[in-house]
Image (cartoon, rainbow, N blue to C red):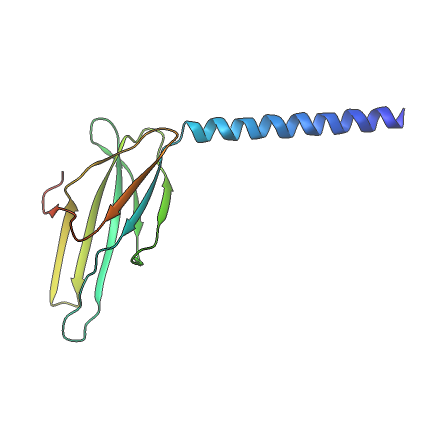
Length: 136
């Protein structure tokens, strides 16, 4: 009798673990992820260190912003990975750069990054990245 109870208990545990791991896989297949990395260099001025941050706006199909991720401090070359909101279909990138009170600017990356469910979208900024003052 005790042996039968142990066998049933072990079987229920195995079934439970298998069921939970299957759900996790289904969730991952329906999630869109994106990885952000910048290779851009911001220069200081006369001994002042630059201050900058990025905001990654997740947008729905109509372009409305539904979520954002702010990266500060930014480490050049480091990858930051995010799981997008379930309704997000694209990502827009905005950054703010300043040197003390001497200079300040904000820019939009002029590319919109499309997200795909079950995949990771790389977002890599470098010296060839087009930026501008208007939101793309």
